[in-house]
Length: 134
Image (cartoon, rainbow, N blue to C red):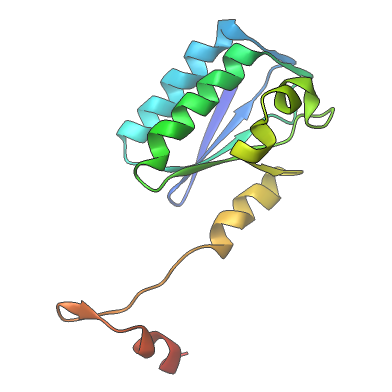
């Protein structure tokens, strides 16, 4: 399989099982991401750790998808390719666009740190309840 997808809570984790992620696979990853987006997912991890090369078309698919999900408060965390960030990421300033992580576990844990808990009391919410109940 070229792509492995796992659901962890409200998080979709995509593992790219390719040495070379090229324009040939860019439509496939975009289609998979779109399917999960249409199912309500807005938080993603894309694991590129097995990739030795990522071409601009594949990277563009990720950037275009990121633009789509940002409007709904979504984000993508990228697990760095095996050889580091790579020339494609440096040329396109993608390091600044994506949150990059050294491992899949670190990327997944980063979402868990940012979970917000709000307690609702009737028709309004009260953050003081959250603090005082802890």
